[in-house]
Image 1: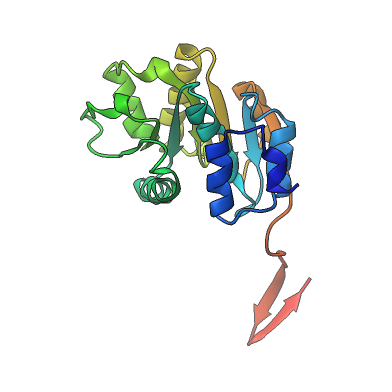
Image 2 (image 1 turned 180 degrees about the horizontal axis):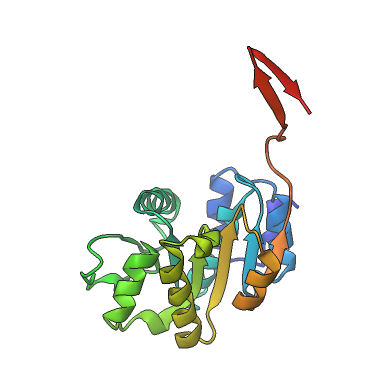
Length: 221
């Protein structure tokens, strides 16, 4: 699908930014997400290979909401380093059109100015702390993006993430949840728990070959 097919379906500012980023064609997973009513604010669980275009799906959900004044967006990253990377990426392309914040500091500290921002990029631990401090802007959140959502199965970080998503679902009845992952062992079960449509695809930008390496030689299967 050519990016021009989104004209009239997403805000002009968003389409202009995607064009400036050099995006001309949507990848298979992105097309599937749109057909699964991404722009109609449906919950989606995206299970596709690395570099298949999951971040753009998150962008479309977040900035469609922000530019249409539907509500704020929160991007939950599993690590501070990944949160910082996403902050820099979004700030570079969207910083002139939206207020973007990075909140990954001391989990016991509250960032008092976060209510001024449109997109808050954070970790599950930090967001859990913010909610426990009863932030007054949570009610304004319309989109929650959970990157690497398969970490729900992680014995160390999984419980916090599971409780966090449960709380968000309870407090924000109309929130759109977008879960992103390249590896989910039980995607149908997780999609049901999220009340989400499962979007799966096997396409990857580079074909993956399996084989064995021995004494300087590679034997492909």
